[in-house]
Length: 171
Image (cartoon, rainbow, N blue to C red):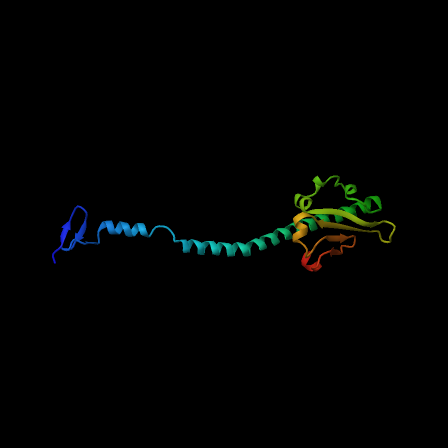
């Protein structure tokens, strides 16, 4: 069982002429191992799909909460301006324009895109005078934020909501 060595190809031949451990076999084996199988790709796609199904709802809830927080901050600043207006005019303003917000362009962009802000329930004849500032969601914010709905703040600092959630959860 002698073996002939072909120095040029670096392969070993048995007497029967079959190739064993040749560079050619090594190259074939290396080429076979490149790439992914269809099953492996489908598993990766399934994992990405599951992660996306979990992450997207969390992301949208984060955006809804962020927009609501911007609206709450804005109506808090309007309440502050109302108190300042009360000191100057001895009455509460019955519209936002009287407080210096003459156009929607003066609203923060997160608020103007997602909420309609109004001053309502102004009664300067009551003792003490009263008002309520309300931010009502519009568009996709209204669709996604059914838990809180409109958020409001009155002259005493009492916070309110129109949705099914609690004030503590929404403010």
